[in-house]
Image 1: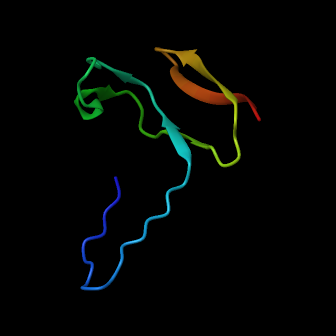
Image 2 (image 1 turned 120 degrees about the vertical axis):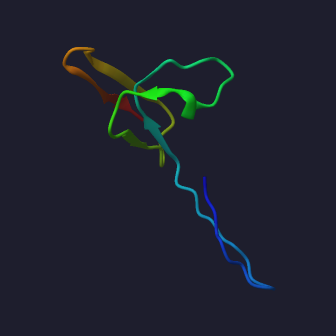
Length: 76
């Protein structure tokens, strides 16, 4: 979500979006419900920059006891 709180008369709000994906682990997700209703099982998200990427393979590693992590296996 992006916002600009104050835009004066005759001014423009300019937003520059960076192509990124954020990966995380969650439980209790219900189809067609907002993700904020899910229980996130992570303190931080894995960030993947998509600038110039046309194809990527991401793996989810680990287990419930030791925790999970994401890894970029390949990227073109």
